[in-house]
Length: 226
Image (cartoon, rainbow, N blue to C red; front, side, top):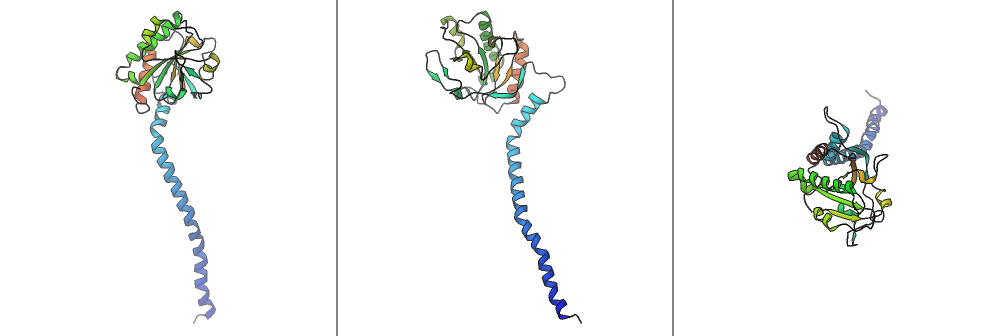
């Protein structure tokens, strides 16, 4: 026959072992909740992350970007850092440029031969995109107050023609070492991030290939037309 004290001690021993298990349950629930939130975030972000990795970081065999990738991409400055005005002197908010891919040229209002070539190239490249052309806007940033010839404006219908100071443009865009700002076309994504610079005297067919790849990779990033 068992001693009475021994019989009474058994339940006490069982209750002591059950306490740590109960205390761990809220922590387990918290960890599970956080894990679910991370999974939801990962699913939502996956298309954007995958497209950036595939086309900007991971280079499939046989494919090389022609334009120079800007890593990390450089965000569009705020209105105070990049004050823009149209040719009539009316202010234009920098954020108005977001939502579309932008192909940007930088040149003075006098627009020399190089400038005319860049503006022509802008127009032709946009047209070669076919059904995707409405996803790409042309932008001409003018860093002076020189009047623009009326004949030149005929080829700039539906393009952004904006004035701002050269020093303020340089807060966002930059040429290759040894080149002028006007030597390049600059590509900006729909979030306003400068992410690619095309070479001086660029080969139009190779620029077109880069643009076509980007349009295909990021079909959900923007809304065609404005």
